[in-house]
Length: 239
Image (cartoon, rainbow, N blue to C red; front, side):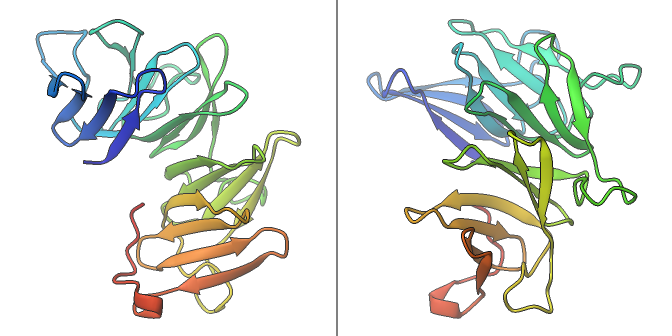
């Protein structure tokens, strides 16, 4: 199981994303309904490896698949609309391997792919943000794995090798938390898998191989928790 989503409008409904498709659990009825790819059905799930599920303010489900692009399940429908990568369309989906999808507080849809971070525009096209060695304000890596929005509306993006990026929608500028393995107060690994926000406003950052980090955004001080520290069982933090 890669992801879970409780239906915000029906507490009895739980969506489950797995390597074998998408499932809808109805707690009141006590049963699952499964959705899988059917090569003969163009309205079926585009790929069975589901990585993230999010519901937008219109009640549509957005499903990030690994290999099948982005799927959209309209409210009340059992058929999926597919958004696939088209090499001839520079304003389309950047890659069919989609790690994550999230709607922010302003209703903007963000998509994390192996080939860049994307923002879906009102006309359905995508703006793409990638790593550019000539631009210090660009992403640290184009393979974007995770998306998170904190209580203040700042967006955080985790990459495979470039650490974390923060995006302030008020200024439309990227900032960075780059990997600094030699610094005990820095990010121990560039592979950032997950984020969470604590009650004090501290940001927790999970890495694949570098353990867990607690960032005090008021001071910029970061504390690292590695394997064996306070009982952390492994440095590979997934969620």
